[in-house]
Image 1 (cartoon, rainbow, N blue to C red):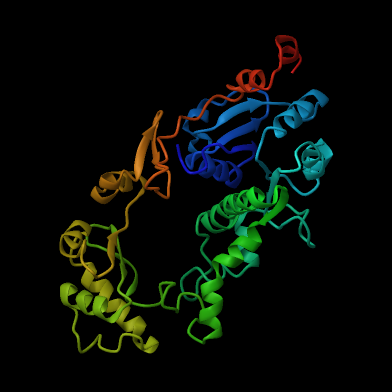
Image 2: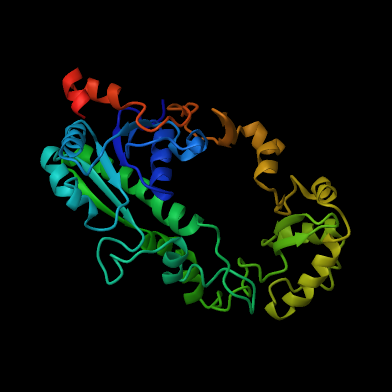
Length: 369
């Protein structure tokens, strides 16, 4: 059922972080109704796991009938969210003012890259641009090399979709007390800035340099990095604490004399070379035999297919089969309101008739819609 069972949330479908937010909410038990454009279904629609667990309604919001139908649906909803550029929803006739006039308790979520106001608010952008503006991208990469985009995890999904989901849930909790709705302005720049909070603290304390690739957590340290193994694969080490570091030296056969001064940054380049040479002597699986499950803070670097078959992930059912594909299971886990297995992604508009029949539309009104 999930802890959000009983909440109806409308998603004005878009790309990437919006559907991801809807997926998270649906995974947690909410009834998420995705409002999608009328038209043909692409062949890969069933493989889009961000559409799992949702009801799909096709509406043309550029027509009065489509807008009227959405506003009828809004009257029954707890929340709605969209990812348009600022002003687009208002021009369509489904902005916060129009929707909340029909449902004053509605929580209205808005997610954009730059936010609803500011000099860049109406400019186009992508994850890489948003995390550039907040210092996140600058901090990721090797010394003397250009910044490395961390996929689109930090801006789109962490700073955007997940913060929007948090905002919606927080606002829904508040509405239970106040009886009033409100509007959420979820900007990926704001969210990715919050994700960098610890590094602001470390920088203020003088323990995090602005020179990327030279710090404890950015690959600068010999005890917190990835290393290539004899078979061309990789392992990861995170032996920060002294007791974990001592175990690393012991199992890897590294000289305690050479590696004694763990936190002396001047020695890190030399020590990193020595660690790299040591790990190159064995295959990834051989290092797993020696280190996996110990307090060294070790893991093999797995690709997407390998991850799904790792014994730890198999035991926890971290990956499940939904429809035609293996995909990540809902998270986090709840002891009582357990999230079920999501339903597969549906064709666009598969639930249009059912949803509006529930609203009381007759056959004539359905045909007109």
